[in-house]
Amino acid sequence: MSERLRLFVAVEAPAPVRDALTAAQAEMRRRTRSRLRWMKPDALHLTLRFLGEIDAAAAPQLSAAVERAASGCKPFALRLARVEAFPGGTSPRVVWVGIDGDLEALEALRQAVEAELEAAGFTRERRRFVPHVTLARVPGGVRPDEASGLRAALPGAPLAAPEFAVERVALIHSTLTPEGSVYRTIARAVLTG
Image (cartoon, rainbow, N blue to C red):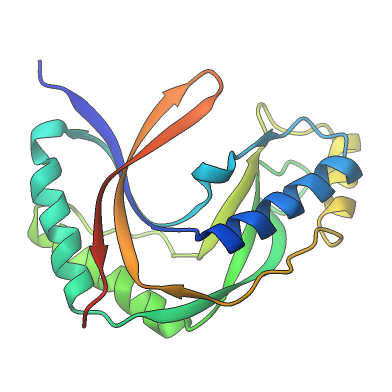
């Protein structure tokens, strides 16, 4: 049986953005008693496409596809927007920060990645793309009393972060552990279009 890798394509958060996101996490920890599993600073990223469990032998082909996608896109700028929870009702499962800025360029990059992955044999993603960075996951759902506290904590989370340049995209390997996912970048491709 061949080795399997859990892979995704993402924009990695630069250090100033990670700092702002971890500050938001700290503020939310202070403001809420919900049982949240917080993302580690090195795990903060903007996923463009989750690929799932892939045969390890396909990793070089996927790296080449990401490289081709990046070569047709120019660098652009993004910024952090708002802190939200999904789904929005009484049982949020994910706390995340939305992304703003040059969303047309971000969508062009995502579409280029989709096209290259499709050429490599992957089916196009059909779900609507909502650009975001996950801050925390809610294991096992939230009790109604926790949900109201969590919703109250969201607007107060600080997002003082500078605009940041998106100059590369990465193919990342995710290993699931009891303490949360551990990420390892397999390849980075520079936007040169």
